[in-house]
View (cartoon, rainbow, N blue to C red):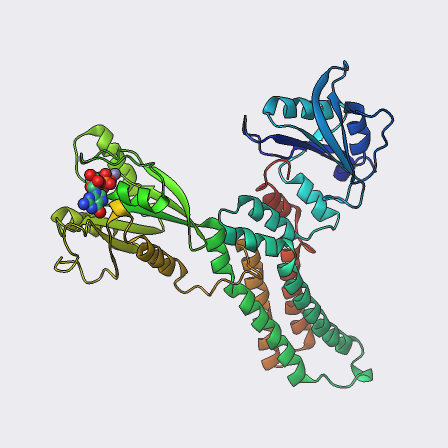
Length: 458
Ligand code: GDP
Ligand code: ZN
């Protein structure tokens, strides 16, 4: 049926579109016309070369006038052995945005439609090649900022979460079937083995609880942590950022107040993606530029997940330090006592509430391991150990919580010995919630929301 959205052939640039980056640029086509469109713009170098599925061929991309646009490789992946389960053709051009864009233009002129963000993955889902959790893992894998986050996404892509959910659904379905049979043919069946039935239900609840426990850690690996370095001018904030990130990005000087703007650096701390922010010194000032930086840093300090307050060991705990501390003391905080090469940490009057206090010599990178340990401890407080086998995102966790609540109600109905109809309503609700995770029962708006997160070409 040519009017269904799946019937048209879509095209997009599948590789990053940063100018002058990457030596290969890939244009991807998917749909029933993928091969015929590709054949009109790609000419094999060997005349009469036959297109065979999953075989690269070498040749040229040509426009309508026959002018050569690029020397390229083409590969056809015949349905259903492709990412989308449709006919897919990839044209591997030379990197460089002009050539890739010209090739895409040709595809569009010959009848393809520009793909929406995530549309290839959406088709893979709609055609049943991947379930919804796997599709979401594709987006997570692309966005992963640490090896651990990538591993976690890969586990999802391999269907580990989907598998657990399917097993759960299966168990609940058989529990439901037993009840429904009793509703329909009460007289012909032996009475329900209640203790056994309840034990199975309890087992499902325990499994859901275990899955939910992975959600927090998963979220941390996905979104990472924002860590802001704060403190008065000249205590060594920029030196600390440079030593920590191993880059000379912040400007280090002897003049107070040179780090005017916010400098940021991305690093991985024990598997957690960390965005490190060096703020201008927080202090009262008349200089408007400085004020801007100070305002920005106060605001940043409010949005950061963890604050690293740096003080100068030689100066001790000054009034200015105390003032900054007052404005951020309700936030997760690590105190770095810097310049301990000049004076020892002992003897400095630090407020006893400050739990984490790390001696450091930022200029020499001393104290960084202890700082990282403190960051990890704060980040992982109350979170379970990493379980890379499965992990949930917020959407999936919300659905599991719903399922859990429904099963609680089934337990209640059971205890109060309510009629079977009450049990089945809640069992069905739990099954529905689980179906939303894998995509068996999911609305179009939810799909839109999920796939619009993707980049074009995925
Ligand atoms: P910021 O204004 O807080 O960003 O401080 P900077 O990182 O710009 O450092 C101010 C000065 O302190 C520079 O001259 C640094 O070389 C010096 N400094 C930074 N860390 C240390 C340290 O651990 N020991 C000593 N002796 N000097 C340091
Ligand atoms: Zn600085």
